[in-house]
Structures are given as structure tokens and as C-alpha cells.
Image 1: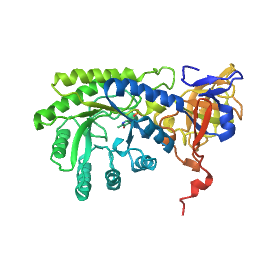
Image 2: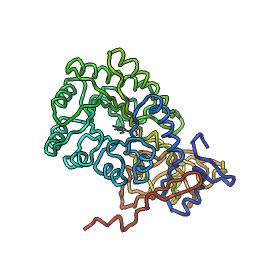
Image 3: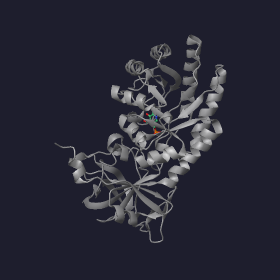
Image 4: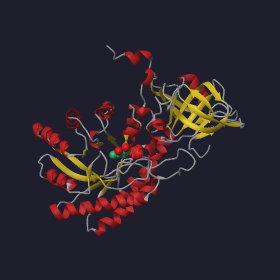
Length: 430
Ligand SMILES: Cc1ncc(COP(=O)(O)O)c(C=O)c1O
């Protein structure tokens, strides 16, 4: 349906995801409801394995910030991918399902002493060093514990990702990583090479998120190779790994392209081949950190229509029983989504409406001006491509409980996160 993999329409006009009817799901679990298509997630992981791991010997770490639960963590563990975490909470989730700690990459621009200590105690595979403070703190912890750890250094490559300002990270003016327009990054390398506890394995860069142009990754590899060549010349030390980060774009609405992972990985590996031989460097192991590309299109959110307000000649608002608490991306950075009437897809008489949430904010709009069949109270709306940065960014604003999460796979459904209750909302209040 609409080219969304895994979505079909039943004869009586009901949306189905991996063979499971949405009317059945909302009846069983209520609304709002996050639904994830496991079949689609597994297909995408397979695509990554074929086009990055098997074909090129690369490493892929799932960027867990996109969507993480214990179930998702077990799935990634079973599939043998690495995991990129950015907080004690994400790391703790991984530990809770015995995720192999040597396959964890620990990111973040302000890892606390406690988080770094946790990373050392758990034995994570890589810490990505983001700033000088962190070198001091990590070294202090390691020396006290008589331990060492493998690290990558994050640089800001000075590349504009042509994406929304809030999800750009590669430009010089960024809170992440060591800038490249001065000597900072080289000073960081020197400091780490002189450390008895930090083992420098790789250089990392992440340009931004929801990128649709593969030539950006070519530029990134060029910057990384040049930097690694300077390290070799200055310190006679050869870097073994590069990490190109994530950011691989997905389909949200018309105008977005549907991009295969090989569209990105082929360009990355070709650039590695060319650049590293040009600088006379050994070919590194290439890490990537896809988040959105794995789960984004695999997720939908189901809502029940409530109040409808028609401001004649101006706009018709259709309110749903969720909103910015379960999907902050529209309010946060004007993200665009598509929606369908999940319980009446055979109905064709369309009108233009704006889908808004139930929160006490005028900016609580999920989709502005979308053409949908005439909706009534009680109808079900499915917002598509909500798998990434929706559940993981959800809040309890207005003390609204967070929705349940269900995983579906070829006609089967399983609850993977319970719906929050009002008791959950007040449980930490004293
Ligand atoms: C360092 C790093 N790696 C990977 C990702 C994942 O990005 P995406 O979900 O767009 O693939 C991010 C996103 O912010 C990131 O900052």
C-alpha cells in the first residue's frame, strides 16, 4: 500500500500491518498505540548484513536512540549487530538482556562520571570520545581500576548535511565532537596516544539525520582519510577503524525517496577504497550506525478520532487521543508525516483536514493540511513511518500516560511495552 512495505488493505477496507488488522489491534490494546512490523525490521537488518557486513566486512551498530526496548535489544542481539548507546539508561537496557558488552559503542557529548564508570565496569567495546573533559574523566576511572578501554574519537567534519538544523551535527558549530578547523582534534589524538589506559582504535563522524544524498558520505570519508593520514605522518600511528555514523534517510511523505542501504554503503566503501589507497593507508574496518533506517518505516501509530472542529472557510481540525506526547517531531522540527484512515480505506470522498493532538499547546499538530476521507468521532487514524524517534522521545506532558507498544510479525502480535497507567504517572511523586 502506497509503497509502504508490509502494509496492506483487507477486502473490507481495514489497514493491515504484517498481516494483522488494525481494528483488531486497537480493540485488543487500545489507542494511541505504537505498532512495529518485526518482519520489516528483520528485512532491513538482512539488507544491512548483505550490503555492508558480508559484502565489505563492515560493522553495523544499531543506533538505539531511534527506538529501544528490551524486546528490540534482544532482537538486535539475536541478529548479531552492535548497539550504539548514548546514556546510562540505554546501556542499562542492554545489560538487562545480557547484550554482549563488547559490541556496544558508547556515545554522548556529556557522559557523566557515573555513566563512564558504568561503561568501564560493564566492559563496553568502544567509548566514542567527544571532548577533552571526557579523556580526563575516563582515564581517571581506568587508572583507578587498573583497566584499559578501546576508544574512537568523534570529529565534526565541517560538512553540511542539508537536513533540518536540529538534526545536523557535522557542521563546525556543533556541540558534538572535536572541531577540525583548528588543532583540537590532533591534540586529542596526541593526548590519547600518550594515555596508558585509552587505546585509540578509530575516528568517528556523524553528519546528521534523515540524509538523502549519498555523496555527503563520500565527503565524510575524504575528511576521515585525510585526518588519519595526518595522524600517521605526525605520530607514526595507523588508525584501524572509521565510523561514518548513521543518518540514512527514509520515506515519510511524497518527495522523500525510498533508499536502499546499498545506495549509501556502496558509496562509502568505494570512497574508502579510493581515499585510503590515495593516502597510502591500510583499509580500515568501516562502522555505520543506522537507527531511523532500521525502524522508521517499520512503525505506525494508531489513534482514535475525538473532537472535530470546522472553522468554516479557514481550517478543519481533527483531534486524536495522542499528539506531541507520543510524537514530538512535528512540533520540534516541523517533521512531515502521512496518515491514512485505518478503518475505512475504501472510502474515497476526501476533504482537507489538520490532525492535532490533545495537549494544551497550539503547536500540538501531528499533520497540517492533509487530504483524508471524511472522518468521524471513533474512526482510527494511522500515522505512518513513526518507528524512529517517536516512542523514544515520548513524554508525559499534561500527565498523559505513554502508549503501549506492540510488535507484529506475519499475522502474530505481541505486546512489548505495557501502556502506562495513571498510577505510573504518580509513582515517583512524594
Ligand atoms: C552518533 C550518531 N550515530 C547514529 C545516529 C543515528 O542516526 P539515524 O537514526 O538518523 O540513522 C545518530 C543520531 O542522532 C548519532 O548522533
